[in-house]
View: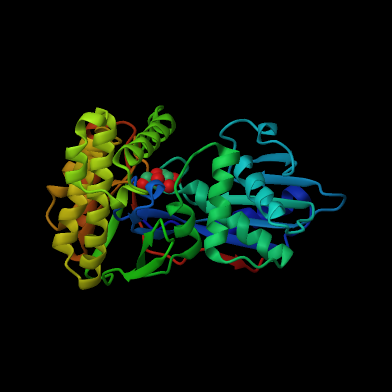
Length: 389
Ligand code: GLA
């Protein structure tokens, strides 16, 4: 089944209906899957995300009147008015408008002279599915602002600005992976990010006829997802201090063993996950580069086990998908992707087996689960860009 993703068209149409004039500028940014390197970005570790061809669009025009900001979400048919120079609490916690307002606030803080704006957003990235729908929204809005204000910002600063919006306006203490992936990815490539130096390296993905990635969305997000994320991050920070390193990437498993009595159970488990995941991620980038997909698949499986057993951010739905996937012919490896506690699992599948394996995994999962999972055949995509509307 081929689905037509048309977030630009939806955003543009809804803009016209809502604000009675066409938009003049726009930005678009993709969601992502993370091949490996999970729960490592906020400790300055390594990650290997791939931007996917599901995107968020933000279109807009300068508003009449003084510094008046309005935004409309096409998919929710909801319009808000907001003041980016005021408090995040003007909008409810978790509200999409906080991401929009937070990014504009970041540009104003940088000294960008942002005029009053009317904005409309629409997204093809499933919400709350661990595919970075919020980073796609932030970075799409950032590209709209740079376009409408003719403001120069490099992609790393743009990602950092969007991450800050997420911290201060959305209250989520995320790392920088999602925003950098949305801002800087390249089609046909995964991107190895060193989250301490923010250096990036584009690593070619296998050709379409060699291997492909299937994404299974469990369509569940467990209630604890956000609070557990914050707890894990805090445990990693405590472990960093106890181990006396500037980042967990400087720690080794031997150091953790030597300090076991000074670390709580949670701290040592989280540290063990991060230390081992950093090693796996660097190794995985090499395997991807050299085309050793069997080895890459093994690292994916180890990553999942570590997230399940040490980091403890998986759940029954993700574990089942991964188990079903690795048992299927043609699957190199599978793992949860994103923050966990629901959301998506990915499988790296030999192309000749792709259709059979992907549908078989989904069919077996659906036999015992409600809601059913959705299968997304993601292609790698370029990062954000400005669009002509
Ligand atoms: C979420 C965060 C990212 C990262 C992942 C886990 O997606 O936004 O910064 O921490 O979880 O790897």
